[in-house]
Image (cartoon, rainbow, N blue to C red; front, side, top):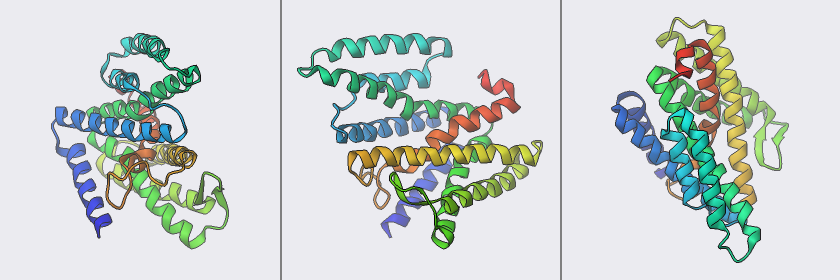
Length: 262
């Protein structure tokens, strides 16, 4: 029951942020999601026997989320220098490189996709919903197709429960949903272009799911945290979206070049 309750509350929260929240509330919401994901990610890093990523990863995430594009590279360079300099205080210098690398990676991994989410929402709430919902539709299709027909393991070491049959079902589920949804709300886009974008976004989402599974397996944990009753951590819920959002943003940006300039 708590799993269903959590799912309903998450769906209501996501729906509000995507469709009805004012711009500032949406930005605050995705920033909070990024911060929670970074906190959970830092726990996975610790599970790998590496020092928890410090504040510089969080600052790098805020930089990529809010800084003008021409300042991001400069800011990352300065943060990397500061992170390396402050890490020299460690007694074991073997901790310096892994900790700093994980911090910068964590900032990119947990925050960058939400900048693309902001860009998609500015373009159209339907583009943003499409990018997120093809992950949900694909995940649901993969579950049922995998249970019914799954015979060949997709990634037996990383995620033993996933199958190639489920992966194909996931792609089909995303395409069917994506075409039906976007043809209704954005009828000016040819269906085959929507289908191609859904395929690209779905494949990216499956890699996102596997990437987080690999981090959890390496850390020896089942979930990134116990924040969400019955669902594990927030990172467990958005791992696929973290990879899908940049891909969908790029694909839609090719259809609407002004989006890439925003």
